[in-house]
Amino acid sequence: MNNSICDEKVYASIYNDYSQDLHNYLYYKYGDQFNITDKVQDAFIKLWDKCKEVTFEKAKGFVFMVAKNLVLNEIKHQKVVLKHQEVKPKDYTNENPEFLLEKEEFYQKYQRALAKLSEEQRVAFLLNKVEGKKHQEIADMLDITKKVAEYRIYTAFKIIKSEIKELK
Image 1 (cartoon, helix red, strand yellow):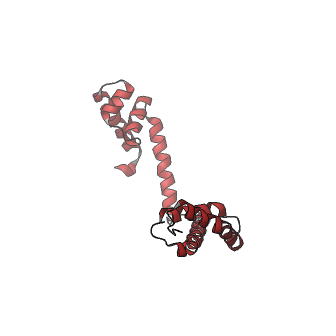
Image 2: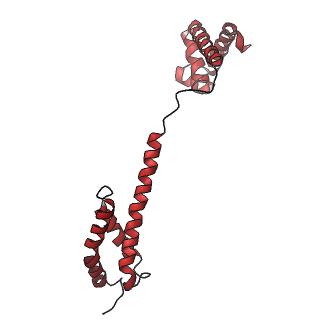
Image 3: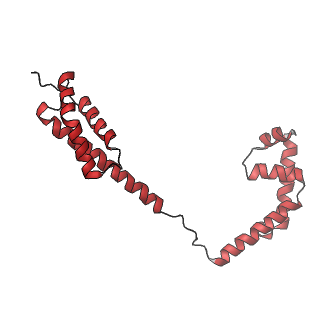
């Protein structure tokens, strides 16, 4: 008998002889939480892929080793997933309370300054400074000329600077 694993009849006999034993081994060792049937199938697929390299005598050890490694890799992956689930985003900053208070006060001044702008100025200013739009893009969006968009942004910035002393 030709003992080449690449021969379909030899491969089928190896599968029939060892697949149930491999399934039972993995099931008894690791339980059914890692989809043992898939691991058995993957091990035999790997055997087929490597049929020219694996001898008939080593076939059983090969599929058992591959299947065991597949399960161990799955266990490692689950540990990584659990570790990342445990990491909670920090709910504090290293900034001192004084800085946080100043930051909040500045934000309120900024909001008041924005409220003093006309709607046209505010829209053009926010499109430019917050969304990063270019003057021509703003002009196209608002159906105005580029010069008008530039003027609205410039006057808005001038008003904001006059309202917020920290910007000078």
